Length: 88
Image (cartoon, rainbow, N blue to C red; front, side, top):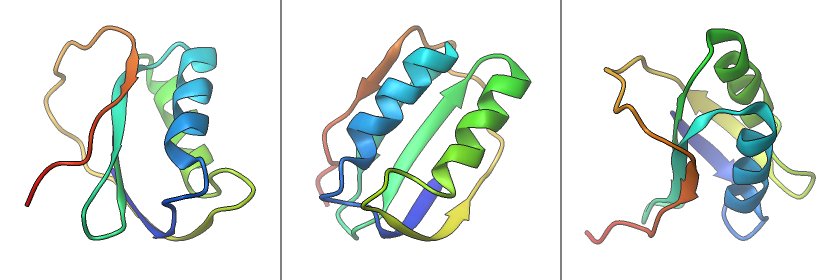
């Protein structure tokens, strides 16, 4: 998923990681160079849906304007990590 708005510099990635670990969802989250945040969630469908719902709000300091969700083939991930911003 891609999350747009004021989502960088507001602890979005760290809060996302904490929530994913609590929900027992695998995946990753990272800042994008364009100011958006990208995240991948894998696991139980209800738990993934819970994380997607959370992303529509984000942490208290965030101002989420848009969330784009797309289904992809599972990467068979284990754990949840904050990844570095990709280089352009």
